[in-house]
Length: 498
Image (cartoon, rainbow, N blue to C red; front, side, top):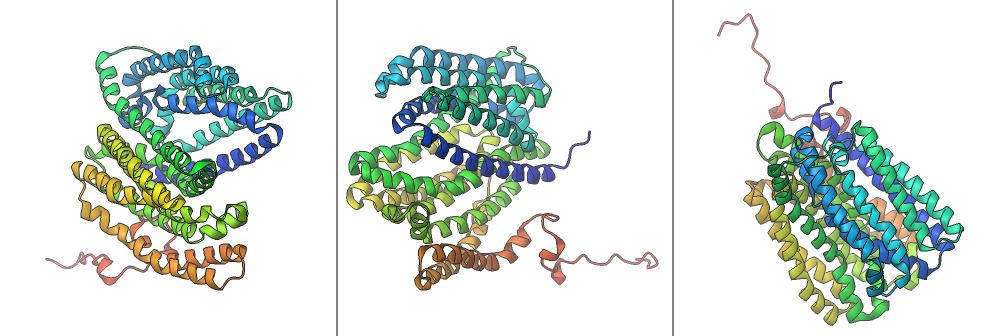
């Protein structure tokens, strides 16, 4: 069967990836609310211990080898060796988590979490077994199949977790649900790709896979630390109340990144890798277009979240959480940069520059810790958000641009288009603030301000966006009429002798 053109696969993959994230996150939210009514906070805390340990180890369990396969392809040649290497690494971590479960649970202050830790440890082994079919689906941009697999896994996890919770299994109900859903994922990945587990060994492939994947896994681990170090510092310096407000604001600010960024990550890396394979060079053109389009969407969403922080918090969570709005306004801006960085991370990963990623993540962590300490200590809750934004704009953004420049990207060509959404969002933000000033209550401010602000932004940015999008993406009636200079010159008549 003839494959669709890469551009068509990218658009389809992006649509299915976005649908996947939106659907499953909504389902997870609803399931969490339902489980919260069945289980008590202590039980959730016990499971949180197991989930935290599993999340940290999952980041490094397969050593970034899935990304290596997505980048390189050649599954028949590289797959057996990568499968063996992944199985060994994930197996060792599974054994460590299984036998160390009592000590881990005691260290984290919840000795009763040991059985859940052991159950969750088996998900590491399963992830290692399924690394090759998962990478094949990612490489081929088969996001529709991945969505259906995740949907089945979600149904398995939810059904078992709720059923076992009602039967009195406590934290083990959620752990067993997660474990069984992982079994379903791995089985369906092999079935969908019509493959069976194959193991083998070539030292040259193992060496190249490890050299690329290990720095990438470490960078992922540093990202996980980055997502938690602010909670540690805010809690230590400000106490539990301040930490609760900050955690809520950070979670709300992560909504755009969770939906947009995750969808982009799932598609961008294999698309960059395959374009590079086709042309033999890094996909600079694709990077510019992907960055511009992603930024054009991230900027207005983050602007609306920041300018409407007060109405968002009050409408969704009530006035008791109103103090979180101040820091949300800062964190919303950080969220826009995080979405843009997702594109750049995908490009660097596809190009094999995992070492550059590791150094940037390390720099981010080193810079954030002292600035966050000073910001929270001096300015309280708002200082935490200001610290994040200061580090992102002053340290992380230039560091990423330097890394991209080192790969041959012309920074002027990359950065100049990003200024268009920034220029368009300023008057749009003024429209939102005007609506907030005249609207009577939070709900009206949220709805009317959101619609007016986005409409103003769209009107300003649309002509630029229509020119930027590749031909065929938009219906012809929505694109501009070509200028005279853009129209092709008429071909000379065949009757005229030159």
